[in-house]
Length: 273
Image (tube, rainbow, N blue to C red; front, side, top):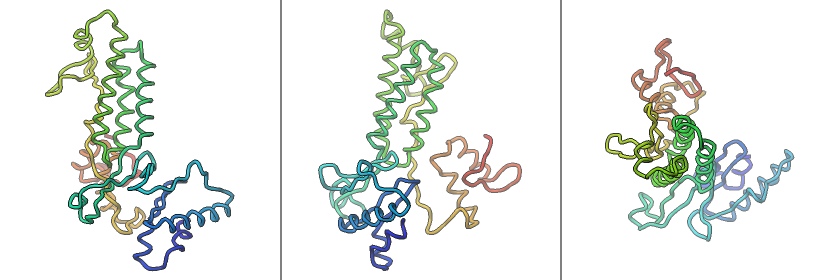
C-alpha cells in the first residue's frame, strides 16, 4: 500500500519526504500539505483495497486540516494530533507561527474515566485494599501509554476526577460519619502530600501525575532490530515508556545485560525483577 501511495508524487527525495505515511496494523494516516495529493492518495488506496477484497469505511475515514477549520486535527491510536497557533518566535526552529502537539484523545480520556468509575462501582462493599489493587494497574497502564506526549495537564485533571469518585465511594459507605472522620479513615499523609488514598497495610492508590513524562525518540535512520546492532536497541529499551521505572533502574545497574548469560536485553525478551 505504501509503495502505491508513493507513486503519486515525483521520485524526488524531497517530494517523497513531504508525503508522510504512518501505519499500525490496519490503521493508517497519510499526511501532506496539499489537499489534492491527499485526495489522490485516497483514490489510490481505495483501488488497492478493492484488489484484495477490502474497502475504506466512510465512518472511519476522515480528511482534516491540522491547524484550520471547525474541527482541526485527527485522532490516531488514542492520541489527538493537532497544530496550535502561537507567536512566530514560540514556534521553534520553523518559525511558522504554529506548534504541533500530540495529546491523549478525548475518546481515550472518556474511556479511561469510565473504566475507573466501573471499578469503583463494582467495589461498593469491597475492602479499600481490593479496590486499590484493581485500580492501580489500570492507572499505570494508561499513563505509561500516554507518557510520551503532552499529557501533564490531562494527568492532573484525571487525578481530580479520581479524587472525586473515591470521595463519593467513601461517603456512600459511611453516610452517618463526618467528612473529617471519613478523610482520616481513608486518606493518609505522606511526605509533602496530605491526601493519599491508602489502606491500613500501606497500599496506596497511584496518581496519574506521578508518572514522569518521557518524550519518544524516533528510531535513528534506517535502524532495524534485525540488523544486529544490539547495543543501540538495548539503549532504546532502557528508555522505553512501556517498561516500568523499576525495571529500567535495574537494567541501568546491569548496563542492559542479563546477569546470568551477559547478553544484552532487547525488546521481546523476558526478564525477572
